[in-house]
Every structure is written in structure tokens, then in C-alpha cells.
Image (cartoon, rainbow, N blue to C red; front, top):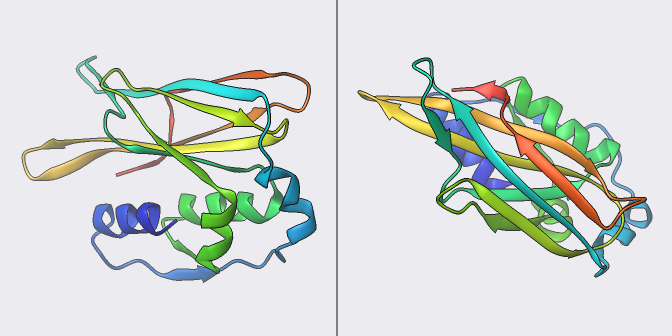
Length: 158
């Protein structure tokens, strides 16, 4: 979460407000997300520039977080251009991270059959300004072993 918060603070001018997470964290509800499983998620993240060029998430971290009310509140706070003020240990303990390749592809393996939120960013510079945004999508693995996450719409533009 620190990296996303850092990205937000840098992209939004360095001074963003912290908003408390009001949802109570339930360790029992999140316990299944810690398990190793046989499911996987593959995906790609990209944005189209106004001129039609495509920019991918190449080299950026991709976070996989539990699709629970607690973590959905994190996303809703980020959409408000704020920093979620909650214990970072919950984010670190229950999230997984990988990196986008040069084409914007990523994958997560050995996942339990749960519902997940995928979160990353696509950014580029025009003159001295950062452009792009944060992308997010939900992937439900409860009834399948393979999920797809094609992310091409920003939930928060820079």
C-alpha cells in the first residue's frame, strides 16, 4: 500500500489527505486469502493516449488484494485522491505483488479460489507532467481455476 500511496502523493502534488478506513478488519474472513491454491490470474494493463498510442504498465508493480469490503474501501478512498489510513500490515499480509512485463502482461499463480482485486498504474510523461492513471478490476476465482484481468480504463487519472 505504501507504494500506491507514494504514487498517489507524487502524482497529486505530494500533499494528499489521509482518510481513515472505517470498515473493521476481520482476520477470519481474510484467512482463506493466505492459502496456496491451484488458481491463476493472467492479465494486461494499458491506456490509450489521446493520439491513439498505447502505453502499458511495463515495469510497474501489480497488486492483488482480497475482494472484501475492507479492501474495497481502500480503493474507494484512492478514487477520492486520498490516502487510506489503515494498518499497512493488513495490506502487506493479504496482498500479492508481481511486475508487468514490457508488453504490460502480468500473472499470479498458486492462488486460492477467492474473489480478488487487481490494482496497478500506467504512466507516462508529457513535458514535465505525469499522465496516465491507476487501474483496477475485480476477478472472481470462486468457481474457476483461471481468471483474466484486462485493464484499460483508469479509476483515477493523473
